[in-house]
Structures are given as C-alpha cells and as structure tokens.
Image 1 (cartoon, rainbow, N blue to C red):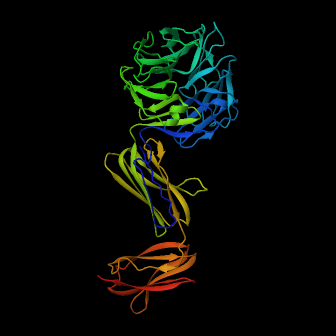
Image 2 (cartoon, rainbow, N blue to C red; image 1 turned 90 degrees about the vertical axis):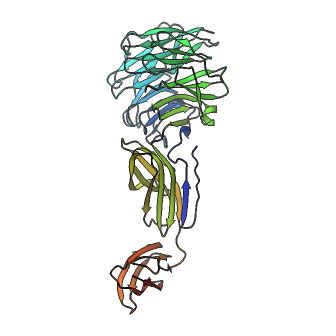
Amino acid sequence: MSKTFRLLITSIFVFVLISTNLFSQTGWAEVTTLPNLGSINSISVVDANTLWVCGDGGFVYLSTDGGTSWTLRNTGVPAVNLYGISATDANNCWVGTVAGAIYRTSNGGLNWAVQVSVAGSFINGIHMFDVNTGVYTGDPTGNGVPYQNRYTTDGGTTWTLSATSPVATNEFGVINAWDWTDQNHFWIGSASTVANATTAKIFYTTTGFAGTWNSATVAGTGTSSGLYYQAIGMTDNSNGMAGSNNGTVVKTTNGGVSWTAVTPPAALTTFAVINMNALKDGSNLIRVVFNSGSAYQIYTTTDYGTTWTEEVIPASAGSLGVQHLQFLDANLGYAGGGSGVVLKYTGVLPVELTSFTANVSEGNVQLNWTTATELNNQGFEVQRRTAEDQYITIGHVDGNGTTTDTKEYSYTDLNPVFGEYYYRLKQIDFNGTFEYSNEVFVTITTPLEFTLDQNYPNPFNPITNISFSLAEPSFVKLSIYNSLGEEVQVLKNESMNAGTYNVGFDAVSFPSGMYLYKIETSQFTSVRKMMLMK
C-alpha cells in the first residue's frame, strides 16, 4: 500500500517526501469521485490516458491523464440517464440514452449531435472498433419485435438494424451485459420478465451483427421481477462465463451454444452478478462483480469458476457499488460505480518509484528520486506549479529503459523566486503513455538579512564555494583580491533578486597564499579571508 509523508516548511532548507510507490499502487484504488453524478453506468477506456464515462442525469466526463483530472463534456446531451459509451480517442465518442438514442461528438465533447433515436428502446451497450465501424445493442420496443442490434460503417451517420436480430418474447436487454472477441463474435445477455422464471436467453453470433443470430436457453432461478443474465465475459471464441440477478453463475466451452452452472465463491450465498470483464490474452482471467445485498465485491477466476480469488476494493466502492469494468490489458483497468466513484486497477508497475525528495538550499531546489524497477521508461518530465497556476514543464531527465536495478535521478531548479512551489514527475514510456507521481511541496522564504558566509572548503585547492544572502533585490559586486589588495577576479557584477546564492571560485591559475573576497551592494559591504594551498 502506498504511503505518502508530506512536511510543509517555512525555512529555505529541506523538504523530504518518501513513498513506497509514488506513481501508483498495485490493485484497486479510488481515483476520484465525480461531482453531480448519481451513478457511473458505463465507462470507455481508450488508452492509458484517455477515459470517458457516462451516467445518470446526462453527465459525460472525459479524462486525458489516466483519471487524475476530469472535465464535464455534455453540451448537447439531454439530461436523461445515459447507458453505453464508446470512444476511439479524446475527440470521438458515442453515448447512448435511456430513451433509445445515440449521440456523437467529434470535438472532445464540446458539442454532441443525435445520430439515431428509436422511441421505446433503451441503449444497453455501444462499441466502436474504429472511427467508422461499430455496433450497439438496445432493447426491443415491445414484445414480438426485434432487439435493436444495429451496426454502422460510417461513424454512425447511419445505423442499420440487423435483419436477423432476435425477436423478443417477454424479455428485454440489460446494460453492459455483453462481450465480444472480434467483429464477428458477440454474446448478449437478456432478461426474462416472467415472474420466478427458470430460464433466460443468451444470444450469440459468429458472423457479426449483420450475420446470423442464435440463442441459448440458460437455466437459473428468477425473482418476482424475472431472471436476468446481466453479465458476460468471454476469454476467447469458445470459453466464457455469465451471471444472473439471483445467484447463478454459468460457463460455456462451446461458444455459447450451451451453458452449465458453476459454483460461486464460497463466501457468497445470496448475490447478484453485476458485471464481468474477461481478458483475451490467454490468461483465462475473468473478473466478476458481485452484490451480496450488503456489499459489492470483485472476484477473479482463471479456470471458469473452479477456484475464486477476491480482490480488495476501496470501502467506497464496496458500499456505493461497481457497475462497469473495462481493462486495457492485464495491468491496467478502470471501473465506475455509484455516486460517481472511479476506480483504477494497477498490476505490474512500469516504473516503481521508491522515493522522491526535494532539498531546498541556497536558493535552489534539488529534486532527487529513486526507482526500484523500470519497464520501457523513456524518461521523466520535471514539472512545477504555484498554488494559483497550472503545472509547467521545467526540465527532462532520461530514463533507463528496462531495468531491475535501483536507479537514482536528480534535477536542480535554479534560483526560483521566493514563494510556495509544488513539484511532480511525469514518467513517460517509449510508447508515449505516461503517469504522474505524487507532488512535493516547498516554501522558499526571503532571507532576513544580508550576509557573506565563510567560503567552503577553507583552506582549498583549487576550487571553493562562496555563499551570500540578499535581503532585497540589489546590484551585487563580488570580487577576489590578493594579499596586496589588488583585485584579481570579479565573480559577480550584476543585479540580483533577494535570495541565497552559492558562487564557485576556481583558483587553478593563482599561486598559493592568502586571498580576500568582498561583496558590495548599496546596502551592505563585507570582506572575508580565505587560504589557497597548493
């Protein structure tokens, strides 16, 4: 678990922050809680940095920094509950409504326009494979009519209803209750509205939305409102799992033609399966969100329910809910839930940052950090801000690519003006993805008086350092004199801001002996001796 120690100082000397991992921790962590949002209903993870979410009340949020910050982008979207969202980048996104409409933006959510609207339907899921090609699934408009399974090849300008879309019989669709492995293979759950139903259908196609649809009748135990297969996760074209609203988990080994019950986690007796996410990387890993009635929990299985492992989630998610999971790969995923809670899952860390320190001395801010491991690390941008301003990049330090050795880094911010500063690192991979460290804070205060310190080292050979402080902006002359009182070198002869400074003196061309160094300003003059011994 990541721990951060933050110390605020009012002197100009030292600040230290140490963390077991300053970029992120492994496992699930709460990223943020989005304001004015009753529930996040669907989430779209484009890449490590670009995320979109939608939810109740017509709210759509965009993040371009991996969930660190979010912007409300819903101009033109009606103030109704939104279900189903899919984006191809930070500009192009599609979102569905409870009223059966699809809206699209091509400018990052600054404006949205309706593309299709089917009265009496309800959008359950959208997926765009690219900016032109995509599909959506929606409720039938009534009994005895087809599900709204539609596809587009022109970015949604036209959405074509599948000619073989299944016809509803006392049933409707369920939000986020679907999965796919490619543009041909899809599986979609449904909800039987028959009270205490003992079966419900799972639809599937191996020839795409425009091809042939089939269905499997799957056993389960319904409630007074019916039996819903409301979560599906397929690891490949043959194997996957589904879960119901009332205590049933099933698996398939033949692409959805038939489904058989599996034993749920032993700790759960009464539950509803809320959502599933299946990795398609050969690991067979499926994450399942359960609601036991008293708490939400996430379990994983890699053997289709033979064994289960619970993942620890933040308390806020356990109580407020987890509605939708999406993973970019085995090491990075996100989830949205009740009251606008956004979760992030981090697996093996690309860069494990073990310390980040800021040492303020003589008017400079010295930043030091250490990594334990690195994977594809292109380098670090060093960023700084004040309390009122945004972060700006002030420098770059190259990384070490991939290594399991401890590496140490440093950067010096020279003579920033007096005030309070925040620093952070932006770690960048070779593929362009990035992540921010925690920030560190320093206060640099104005010296209370003019001073000229004794040089160090003294005696010296041939280099020494001379430090001085200015209580206010001044024109400064700093000079070196020999024992005869002759000026032999001028180190400073310029206007300088208030602050503490350190100036080096290299006496490689001077003979051994006693020397004087003198500072002169309009308010202050001082002279000290130093000894050069070669």
